[in-house]
Image 1: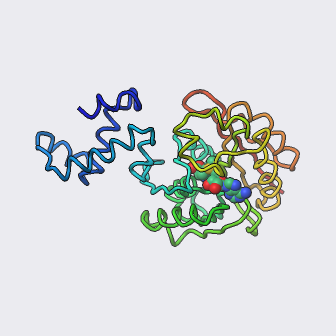
Image 2: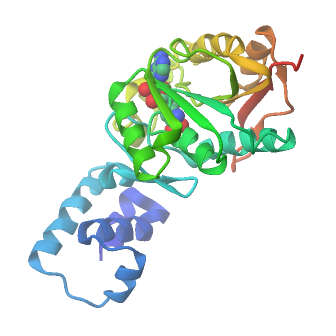
Image 3: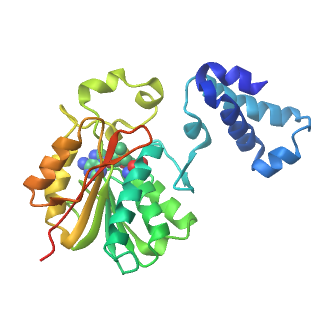
Length: 279
Ligand SMILES: C[S@@+](CC[C@H](N)C(=O)[O-])C[C@H]1O[C@@H](n2cnc3c(N)ncnc32)[C@H](O)[C@@H]1O
């Protein structure tokens, strides 16, 4: 059975991974899989399942094998230039929505920027919730922006998006009601010790945060402070142990913290936020 073979690489996710791989190989959703559970595969189908299983058994993450990952319940295409979006990053979306809703701003024609958008995960999640918002997404990688733009089109959100290849916010002009970012934040020396599924399959440009992991925050927080509207919010994801340093950078740029960081499911401070003081 495929799940048993995947156990060594997938652990407690083996059954789920087996179902996802078989579904992708046969072009079936969960309902189709249940309906055809007892069916005997043709030779061609069995070969297709085996080809995907071998990639997973060689250590490729299941999202890379499928070329897809769900984020905020949105199916997103991936490419070699995009990070696999992580569930922890949903804390950035949650914090941003919480701040806008508490401010009574969620139904306004907001201008939102996502710096280092990758697959477009954070921006597209926000646009799916904020019906009158327009999103501007940047990335250093043209290939990542192409993938994100394809995702926006398939989700019916393309007419509310603008894609800009630049260094964080350097290609943007304000003012923005909300700026979000999940930048690269792994200290360079720690990358070699990351899990093989991350180190070998996520793009280096999505991981490397420089000597102390904070290079991207130094660049994008000061840029963002000059682009926020009066009362506008900045919400960023941080790595473990980085929230204090990132809050200090925000304060040094004239922004006011908006409460303690939002923690992820593991209890780690993950989403740090601040606002430009209202005039
Ligand atoms: C950690 S990934 C996050 C991707 C996506 N926002 C997410 O949460 O899944 C960081 C992203 O920043 C981009 N990036 C790296 N350096 C950059 C720079 N100097 N300017 C803009 N984007 C950059 C990478 O290409 C990558 O897509």
